[in-house]
Image (cartoon, rainbow, N blue to C red; front, side):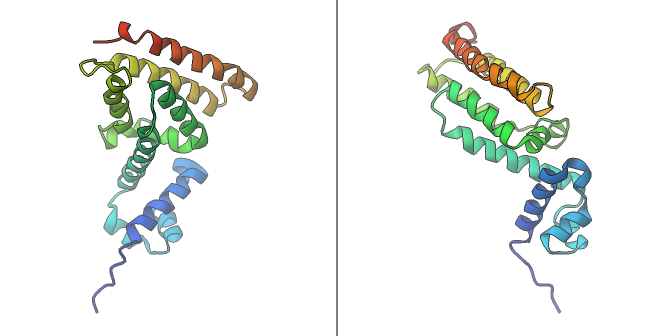
Length: 182
């Protein structure tokens, strides 16, 4: 008797992997746990994702797409920066995964970064402008702030002091965009 193919199984596997990652990070993600939470068996998971790293790659890609969707509607680099930090702080485990050493192993794509770089010339109404250096400086700044909070280095009190300073720093960088133009 032929096997019944479940078209939603891959989606359930990825959602199960995301839930496990969100709950317990890397130590909670194994093929057996993913299969159980997805309502299937381990061989079915292996047929779709031959290794645990393949599942991690799919999760990273899904988080990258989620962040891309969030910043795609932004109207300025300042808004991109603020929404980026919001994403990181609202999904700390997911953000740490995306920014981990795993990312370069599984993909060279940085869709959100490339979107911000492409859109920066639009934001500044400068079709020929290359603002990659500016976007990278802002990304470094907001990633640093997010990671300081996520790792617990900054207390709530200190982070509340940092937030307006971070916003002002991004505004100053944007106000001086021409100095970063390639």
